Amino acid sequence: MSKFFLAIIGGGPAGYTAAEKASKAGKDVILFEQNAVGGTCLNVGCIPTKSLLYGAKQYYNAAHAQKYGVSAENVSFDFAAMQKRKTIVVRKLVAGIKQRLNNEHCTLVSGAAAVVSRTDEVVTISCNGENYEAENLMICTGSTNFVPPIPGIKENEHVWDSTDALAANELPQSIIIVGGGVIGMEFATLYHELGVPVTVIEAMPTILPNLDQEVVAVLLEKYKKAGINILTSTKVESIDGGKVTANGEVYEADKILVSVGRRANLQGLEALNDIELNRGAIVIDDFCKTNLPNVYACGDVTGKIMLAHVAARQAEVAIGRMLKQIPLQRIAYNAIPSVVYTNPEIASVGITEAQAAELNIEPEVRRLPMTFSGRFMAENEGETGLCKMIIDAKTKMVLGVHMIGNPCSEFVSAASFAVRMGYTTAEFEQVVFPHPTVSEILHEIL
Ligand code: NAD
Image (tube, rainbow, N blue to C red; front, side, top):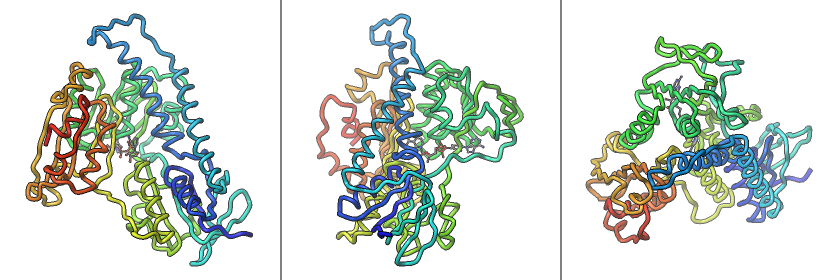
C-alpha cells in the first residue's frame, strides 16, 4: 500500500483548495468525497441559490421596469427552466474543479471515507472497502442542516430544508420560513420576487441578528412594505402538517422551510476519539491544526465562520503550515467579508458598532446614504441604501464597514483590504475609486 503525504476527507471549498495547493507543491494527495466535489457551497448552497436568485431578480426587475421608463407587458417566468439553468451552472463548475484536481494529479476517490486508526506517523482511512494510508489528515467534512427539536418537524412532507427547496421543480403556493438568518432571508427574497407569499418567523428580536442593525433596518422596512410578513421574537412551538404554532398563534402555508443554522459534520471520524471538540466542532489553532499532531481541520467542521471563502483561506494557511512555508501565514478573522444576497444586497466586513462596545473600543461611526454615489442614483430608483463605517476614534483605523445597496457585494473587498491592512482613514483616502461606480461611496464616507 503506497502512503500518501496528505489525505483529505471532504471535497468542498476547504478540501479542494487544500488538495490543489498541496498537489501543486508536488505532494501525493488523496481526496475523498461522498457526493460531488464542490461541497455544499457549489452543489446545494451558494452557487445554486445565486443562480436562482439571479433569475428571480431578472423577472422582478422586468416586472418593475416602469420606474426606469420601460414598460414590459406579460412578463412571466418558468421556474423549471430556472432550475435547469442552475443545474447546468453547477455541473460545469463541478467539472471544472474535477479537471483542476486531475491536472494536478490528485487522487480523487468517490465514496464515504472513515478514519480507521491514527498514530503520529500514519493515518489509515477506509473507503469503499479499501484502506489508504497518509502521513497527514485534513478534515474538511463541512456541516449539515440543523433540525431543531420542534414537535412535528420530522417526517413531515410540508417541511423543507434548504437542499429540498433548491431541488424542487415547482414553487410552493406559499411558504413559512423558520429562522430569519442568512439562508432564511435569501430564500425569502427568492420566493417573494417570484410572487410566493412569504412569512418569516425569527426567534430573536431581529432578523439577521449578527449584522449591523441599522443596515438590517433598511432591509426590514423595504421587505415589510413589499408585503413579506416578518415576525420577530416569535418562537415556533410545534408543526402539524403545513400549520406552524408560534407564540400561541397558528400560521399555515404550503411549505415550511427550516433554516435555523448548521452543525459540524463529524461522521466517519469516530476513531479519532481523542480529537478536541468545542460545542460539537473541531478545535483548531491559528494554522488550522487540531490537538493531534498530524491532523488538520478546515471549513464549517471547525465551527469558526461558516463561509466558503473562510474555508478556502483556512485550507491555504493549513497547507502552508504543513509544508513549513516561511513566513507562516495566519488568517485575519477580523477582516472576513460577508454578503447576504437579499435585494438590496448587504455586505460587511470587520466589527459592528455593537461589537466595538463589547471590545471596549471607542468608535467613531460615520454614515452615508448610498445616494451620495451618482451611479447608485442612476441605477437604484427609489432606494436609499446605507454605508456605515466604524473607525477607532483614537488611532483612526478603519475597523468595520457595513453596507446595504446594490451591488455592494462587488466592492466590499476594497473595504476588506483596508481593514486587513490596518489602514487609517487618511491612508484609505489615498485609494482612487473609478467614477462613476457605487464603490465611490467608500471614498465619499472618508
Ligand atoms: P444563521 O445562523 O445565519 O441563522 C439562523 C437563524 O435562525 C438565526 O437568526 C436564529 O436566531 C434563528 N433561529 C434559531 N432557532 C430558531 C427557532 N427555533 N425559531 C425561529 N428562529 C430560530 O443560519 P442559517 O441561515 O441556517 O445559515 C447557516 C450558515 O450558512 C450560516 O453560517 C451562514 O452564514 C451560512 N450561509 C452563508 C451565506 C452567504 O454567505 N451569503 C448564505 C447562506 C448560508
